[in-house]
Each structure stands twice: as structure tokens, then as C-alpha cells.
Length: 192
Image (tube, rainbow, N blue to C red; front, top):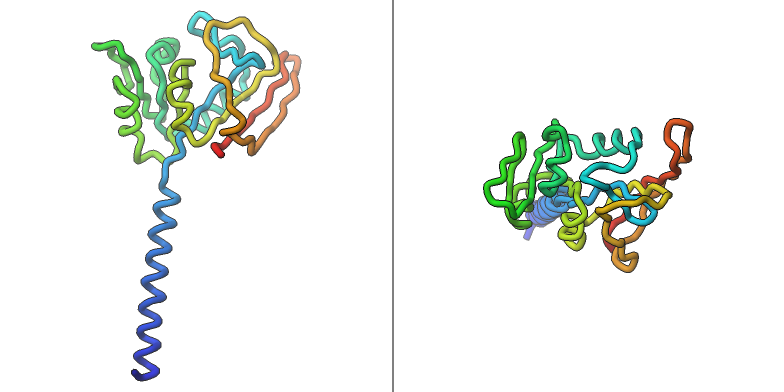
């Protein structure tokens, strides 16, 4: 074997390895990160009478920034609590109510059907309500939680976060203001 043929063979191996690594990296980077996003009180309160308990402008802006351009999966009651389907997002409504129509949304009747619709999205979001969060908690990779540091009376609650399965990776504390009377934190958890 000549020196030139050895170099050509080595270059061929090197290119094949680079292609394999590149292919693996592309597969890794295109994996969806299924994310629960919620705002919950200190006692895990989410809402009451099919409505939000508080109005935190920064939280709503953060929700819009994170979810825009992505699919959002929600339950029927959450969809019905909104004035209309959220713009610049694929609205997917999971319900067991046959015949339910969601103007501007896609209705599905199983978790599998919902997940099938979002498999091409890099970061689909689960946006509630309480039962939907419980159904998807073990399937998710990340939780984006706005923790409002106050106990509230509610009829819908966020599920407990099992810290043996979830690790806090980021936290930003925001103090109360004249316009917004509650201290709150933006917390990101990732599955361990």
C-alpha cells in the first residue's frame, strides 16, 4: 500500500466519522423538548372558576415569548377559557368529549394523537389545565414554572414536582411592585 493510498483511506475514514458525528448531532439537536409551562401559587393553585387568579404582565409576556411559533397542548376547559385560539401557535385541544369543535385549534382524543402532531416541533408546550399537566408530567423534559409566592384559593392545582425526578436549573426572583402585589419567581426544571 502506498503512502498516497493510506492517506486517501484515512481521509475516507475521517470523512465517514465526521458524517456520522454530524448526523448524530443533528438527531440530538432536532429532538423535541416537551415542556410544561404554568404559573402556580405557593400552594400549587392554578385557577378558579375556569379563570386565572392573578394577572402578572411579565408572566404573560414570558409565556408568549416562549410559546410563540410552537405547538401548545391544552385541555378543553383551558381552550374554552381563552377568548380565541392563541395566534402564532398550533393550538391542540385534548378532550374526551366527542364532537367538540375548537375554532382555530385541532381536537384530539388521546395523548398519543397529541404527541404525534407535535413530533416535528423542537419545543412543544403543555399549557394546562391541572389534569392535562398530570397526564403529561412524566412525559415532559422541562418545566417552565412561574411560582407566585402566595397561597390562593383555587379549584385547579398544579401537580407536585417530585424533586427526585426534577432538577432546578434556573431561577429568577421578581419582587412585588405597586402594580403587582406578589413576589414571584421564574423557575426552570429539567428532568434528571
